[in-house]
Figure 1 (cartoon, rainbow, N blue to C red):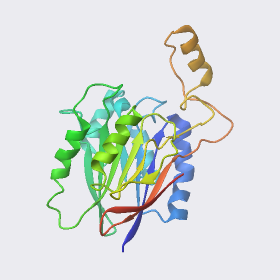
Figure 2 (figure 1 turned 120 degrees about the vertical axis):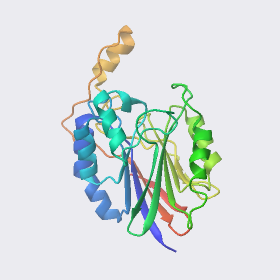
Figure 3 (figure 1 turned 120 degrees about the horizontal axis):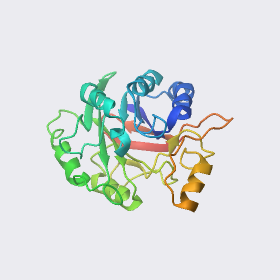
Figure 4 (figure 1 turned 135 degrees about the vertical axis):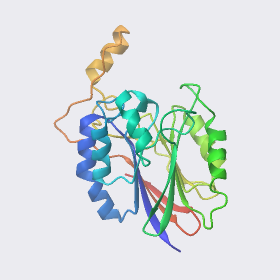
Length: 260
């Protein structure tokens, strides 16, 4: 049995999230003997979108692949990075959009395949993530040995996340939800061997409202005026949230999963 360890990190929120990642991800990798890292960076630029500098900082901190979600389109200049950087993903079910939604990476003799999908319930009505996954999976059907497949499902609905997880259980190694910035406590290995968590959480200031300034959020709800959101500030350093999964690289099946 060839055991490998993957870590998936939840949405980075602003500069505090980037700083927390740079400080803590290298320690997580070293202490847990991590073989592969994915990081969702779609909120790195002050909570909305990404810049090229953000992308470079995430990679320098230790990420092998960077995933995203609906906010990746916020910075038009970043679209060029989506086109040119194969390890910078956007959700695959945006048909015809700049960039790609999946990538294969060979590292230390193991073939890793990362898929980025986005949900539709309570979100934009883009292409079906279920059918999109099936289409991508066909490209892997002729591989000589099963790759280790990681899925970032960027979705609002917990129902949609769990439904997709059971739909693709056994066909991937790890399915992790992102988008809500609130880490869930339901990590588990599903019946057919895929590790799962409904939401990885976020990387940023936890003394906040999903990483944003609490007072501004209060004003928006009380007055129903869309004041501009700002990343939360705190004397305390940001936290890194996500999961670590142990996977049998020979079969692509998960052995265990735990929260960080």
